[in-house]
Length: 441
Image (cartoon, rainbow, N blue to C red; front, side, top):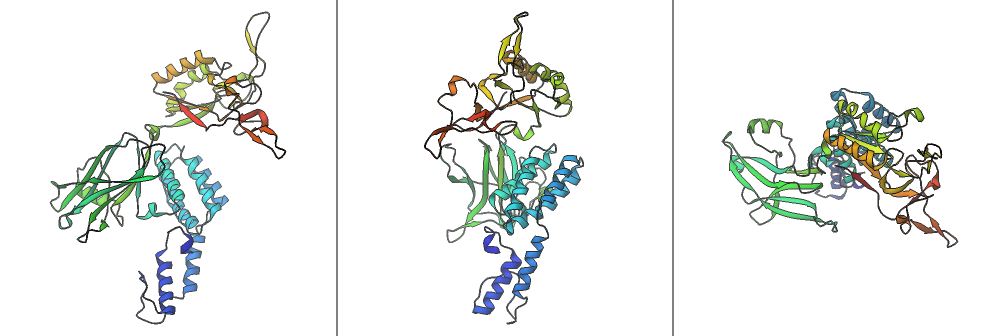
């Protein structure tokens, strides 16, 4: 079981395993909890391993668990209740990773992805950490290693560590692991940084090791660790608790609240600038109130009129679906000369031009007015630019970009596909470059 846990070893299991191997093969393997003073094994190996398995099975995550948590996080408004549920879910995360339960892992990922958009910031940040844990495949971030903190681009990148006077560091360095700043390079890089050591003016029993790297230059993961050189010239990790602080005011309070870890190390999960503070609300441009029918048909102007309602609800980012031009079939009334549209029910996914705002909703002119009002109210507007276009009459600029494939008879076929609100599989064709989301402002 332990070997299938991607590096996650249960101490009880490992200790029992070492004890049994030592007894049978007369070895002297290092083990933490059990003793071999008595040649008779302290525990029956099979019984203990079965008990460990049962302990994790007790926290197995199922479809029923997922459904209940979706209900709780949708309906519950008490932050303490939400956080208590997240703490209980941590046991399910450990169980899923230890047992390599892929079905449970996928359900947990679905839950946490949905919680990224939760109204409570603490829930959103916990969801990000849990997704990191599931992606890493080990729950160390919930225990001791790389205690994660969430930040954003341009925030201060400063880490401080408290030593007792008797443990004043010698040759201490700060080791940083991050992705290369060359966007074409995917490998990780390690860098070494000098540590500033100062004596505490608040508590004379402590000294402070600080590394100030300015601000985070880009989004990503920054894993850090304080290390020092041993007398033999080897790099060794520094034990005890660590914390990150922008300003050190009260050493005693920091010591009281800091999280104890096995090593002085941590991880920063850095989001793009401002995104951590966004309260995003998604609407469909055609029917922003969520009610179908011509009576409730929307437009850029009507969306703009409802800005005050969104702002009152604490929304500071509006995600408008279906804002791009579609094949509505424009014509003019022969009697009045008024522009009319033949097809008002075209799928928002079947766009004809990814650079043109939807004429049925008011076109470029009304969209610019919407943007002007949004800026005045500090409301960010987000629209999507699909990785596919309408299969009926797309703009000519996409002629050479339409994705094709060779069927079993060797004939070229267009790569039709529908997702989201697409009604028919062949109403859109995929383009040969990646999906992008553009954020205005």
